Image 1 (cartoon, rainbow over the protein chains, first blue to last red):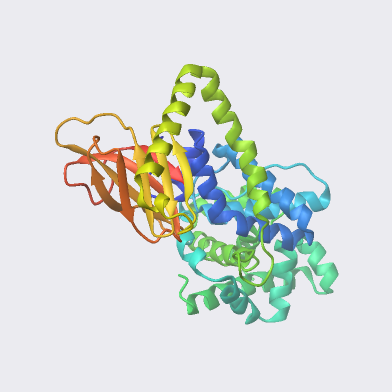
Image 2: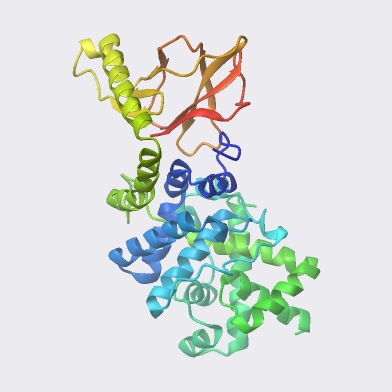
Length: 183
Length: 216
């Protein structure tokens, strides 16, 4: 067994998975399966499809743990799940590369532990306080995988307005999260 | 709108995952050289991750979409069997000897422990590891072990990990000569049990790699 086995952090678990430690893989699954499944279910609106995506995401981590190249694990696996779900929607192949660039600044973007403690309903409540015209393009972009052009056409607003609203909405969500104690 | 304002909008799309592929390399390069955009990216990535957490499935017992426990079984079946088969192929005699030893240890622990004389007092879960067996009851764990002898001044120490906890908690120490170890505790949230070799008297946190690690 390698890594600091007694300290349960995601980087250590992934390091142990590289050593083919099934217990570490199980711990990672226990911590993140609800997040992965929830995203897949939101993207696909299908239980069977969401289970398949969840399985493929975790087995991909088991077969190729080097795909996680550091940084915030929660942010990374959320992006992997979202991208996989959208790939399935589009009938595409599963490609993990390029999920979130491994840049030093992303490593402390947020704390997985704090995020896990934050109940989903509190996040939903923060999200509900964002104006509808800002929330809608964010959700269309993230969960439906639409491009800015597609969002603009669907919403009937100029492309520039879509970009501005997405940034304003994310900043507003960030501010709302700070209100409930997320830095 | 200045060119930098336009870049900040691209950074938002980058964090959300909606930036066109042709723009990704340019934004990545820009982020490495611009503190303002890096801070913006970092903050917006937190918001996007929170957005993802907003749809996370519910815990067992909560109202809302839940993950089938069968899914975990299905996934773990793809992960575990190859480990066991590989070990058994490489060390068949050791595997047979270990099975016999575990069976004997299991019988010994049940024969010894008081709860076996009072059937029906609680469910016992059993977890075998290489040199012993871990029994988990509602209010205690029992370790029946045959670990290697230790040099003078060293003991085995038990560590427990609660579900969702970031670190293991120290528990009892015992000499190699103790074939059975009991730890009274509420096991409702117990996620794992480990044993490591520590200096006599124990350590506040492990100083060596575990000789036993059992995930429940």
